[in-house]
Amino acid sequence: MRRFLALTTVAALALAGCRGTSPDDAAGAGAGDTIKIMVGGIDKVIYLPAKLTEQLGGFKAEGLDVQLLTEPSGATAENVLISGDVQGVVGFYDHTIDLQTKGKCITSVVQFADVPGEVEIVPATSTITSPADFKGRKLGVTSSGSSTDFLTQYLATKGGLTSADYTTVKAGAGQTFIAAIDNGGIDAGMTTDPTAAKLVSSGKGRILLDMRTEAGARQALGGLYPASSLYMDCAWVDSHQAQVQKLANALVKTLRWIKGHSAEEIAAKMPAEFAAGDPALYATAVHDSIGMFNGDGLMKEDGARNVLEVLSQFSPNVKGKKDQVDLSKTYTTAFTSKVAG
View (spheres, rainbow, N blue to C red):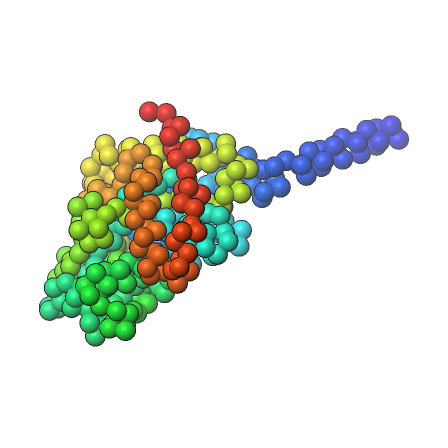
């Protein structure tokens, strides 16, 4: 009995030692553990590839246990990544640049889109015809410090205005944004589909600037502006390369799937509640935005530089630090370039 107990104790200690020295376990997520990903608004069409990958069974096909969580704002989502509560965020790429100036190394591992996928929308009866008319107006953004905040400032500046000429208002997304347009809480605002589709179809709003296409983004922003992406902590990526490759495999395959299917087919794969009781309108929202997805998950270098240019003018954290930012650390194509065709 004593010999049996001794052997059992040695085996238990050896097993515990193995667990304690595993790089994956030490980093908080082993090969078989759940990978938590926070999405900055899971029902937004700009982030559709994340949920669609789950719906298509892409994560499971790669042997991954992925849990998708949601926060209404990308600025909020990044906080849970920094705190270590999640392993990744589906949000705008520009957060990786902003966070680097705070001493955080965050990198985009899969780039969903080369353009923001946002629209600037105004009430249908508004007299606003360009950003030059933003003077004295209340401009809706998702939240202070969000990507929509920086882009709104950029548009206003291109219109010849200064930050003293207008007021930014936290308008959120979805019903809160619609209510803000409806009750005069904002005079214009930046949002995405399906919110934009609901406002236009109801006759309550009209699109002033459309950044859901490359042509529209170049016209509004002077170039590409890579946005929706999966970004993760650099240290986690380095210590979990097998899992990150599997995530890239699943997401890039979904991006390719999107390119080969209609908006109606894509919308039909999404959870019924995303349509909010109007499948036709949701399909329209998907149709209006799917052109933003790049199909390969790769970052375009000139797009990354343009994002830095915008942030260096309007992000309080990036102003004056443009030359200190190492763009090569804010994204990687190492995983997406290896996804089999």
